[in-house]
Image (cartoon, rainbow, N blue to C red; front, side, top):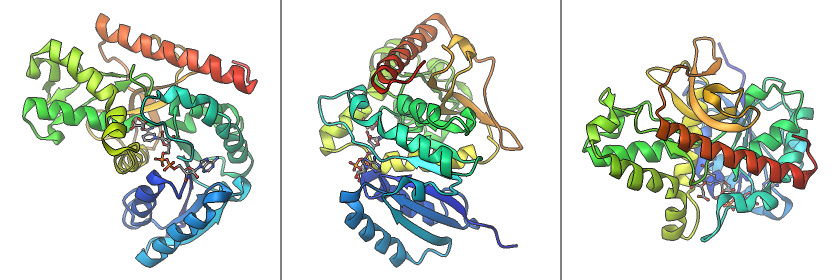
Length: 331
Ligand SMILES: NC(=O)C1=CN([C@@H]2O[C@H](COP(=O)(O)OP(=O)(O)OC[C@H]3O[C@@H](n4cnc5c(N)ncnc54)[C@H](O)[C@@H]3O)[C@@H](O)[C@H]2O)C=CC1
Ligand SMILES: O=C([O-])CC(=O)C(=O)O
């Protein structure tokens, strides 16, 4: 039986991440090899000519699953009837900046986008925010879309999880697929905590397998936390292909039951593990057989882990207060 297409709105579609992402959605890597898709490509007016070029290239791939391409700078058109909204469009940081420095520049974008999603997207629309600072931008979009359930808003820390897995695999001399249950907690910022105690290498605690706590605390944690800056320094531009890859991983894992452990996704907190309520923070997520996600319970966190997670979440509480103050939103 023919399936209806999944309509995916992508903002910043002519940008670097957009260019690495759209072709993977259209080829079936995000939603599966027998699932048609329609792409609503959203850009700001000055980038519409570049967007037309990207759309021409999508046409030239003759993807069998790609049923429609909409190109627009009108958010009301762009989010109309979408099933997924991938909010990538925003300014990336440059060398020497922290992602939070983008709050004043990017935060307001997410008010208008949230409102347009509220008014035009399907009620079942799920929203993944990539544009930085992604946790707080996601919170802004969520609060601007009161008719869409909070549980349908996500921000991305899967790139951090993937980075962390590779660093542990390299250190332990194992394959990256042997590293599982790696949750990155907190903010997508240098304060994030990649939990090496509960991560597994071939089903044993990564901390036990690596048996070098000072490397884990003093090298591994900061390497993961500052990997984005290291990429900017090396490439002269922020991660794009690996970020797009993480978008594909995040969405494809949110639409199917989780096998094995869990994945890192930033979701709305309702106080799990003592996390402050009402922030969008990264936690370990599992998806059940009918497609609902939940935060995995019962993970044992030692004092060091709790302290790191609390510090990262305190940063998110502070970001929320600054952003909401600037935007006139009430906490
Ligand atoms: N959460 C994560 O793990 C990661 C997040 N990022 C963030 O993703 C964002 C995008 O990065 P790139 O694609 O490399 O940047 P880019 O500068 O190459 O592309 C951004 C695109 O967004 C468009 N744009 C700007 N304002 C817009 C608006 N209001 N509506 C629609 N489109 C708009 C621009 O015209 C541009 O084409 C940045 O904020 C970056 O920091 C990047 C890597 C990883
Ligand atoms: O570091 C940046 O600005 C881009 C980003 O979020 C990442 O690569 O993790």
